Image (cartoon, rainbow, N blue to C red; front, side):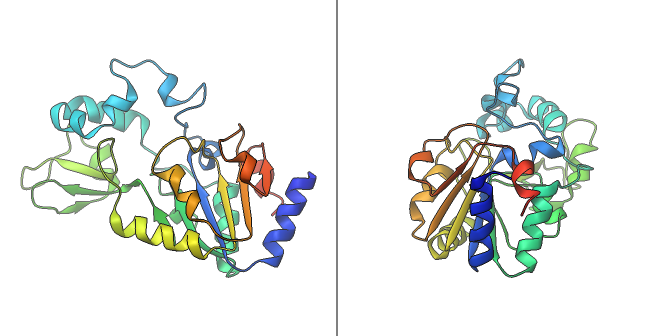
Length: 238
């Protein structure tokens, strides 16, 4: 255990209002690829760039191609939560962790048993008909032969935030409130390059800002603790 991890352990032992803010790096140890690392989705070759495929315009204009990519790369059904998800659930049950804010859409925090999960970018587990608004489980999308359709004939859309779409205002408000009230903010597994998620750190007014990421981030200079390691290597000690 490094000195920085020991310090983090002491802070968690002392403090009673912790908020966790996580990105793709939280789920990579469950086998879900991230986006921006050298092996991430954005550095793989597709007919269209992933940023274009995952845009609202592309979804509307080319739903067949969108769903070919989405079913191939976004299906996390059957994937198990890892040590980070499990330890966060334990901290929540102890009453220390007040909220999990996630940029991930895989639903693994809820699968691990966490209750107060704020999903900034939505979830693959929720899907709705664009016509009648009827909700469908993820299986209805991933098991569909081509474009998933509602019984009314409308196209089913995943309840995930695509490029060109705004974040849910209620989720965003709760996220800002949680960060403003937090004594400790642990930011983990995210490059902090994507706005508006990166700007949310500016709402933190508490005692300890902790950054855990394999690579450097733009916020390393202002953090109280910086750990450049995988989350599994850190959370197994907590």
